[in-house]
Image 1: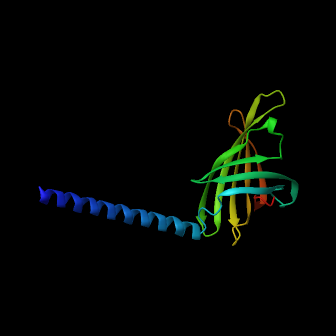
Image 2: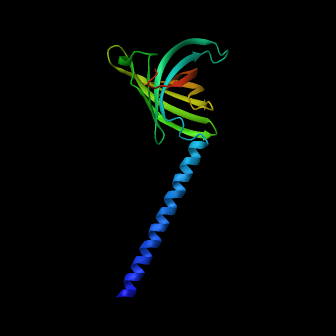
Length: 168
């Protein structure tokens, strides 16, 4: 009886030690990922978007957006570039690629003034976070599709963003 109790206590101690080691390794790995740039993009950002001429890089127009990069690689974007009655917020994904570099992609749905669905836009960018983690720049494309999924336009764009906080 005492021997079985000793085995149970010893087995439980081994399991607790293993769980503690696994937790420490996972936490250490997450800390290293943040130090290497992964996860530092999380948060709310004031974003200045510039639509560009893809051939010359000339700015066609600029407007403000707010983007929220959330834990586990999801995002939501709201823009002043188009009236909200004519489009949904952008919803999408982001990931850390290397060092201070990230990529993100999101999709929004468009409507005409009568409320009819007209199609969707997919925006994809590569971003570089500054060394302080307080601003980033990005560049990429916006692909515009009809309601049937036919690509009708590819636009180029760039952004400059700063963290949104209590001082804003």
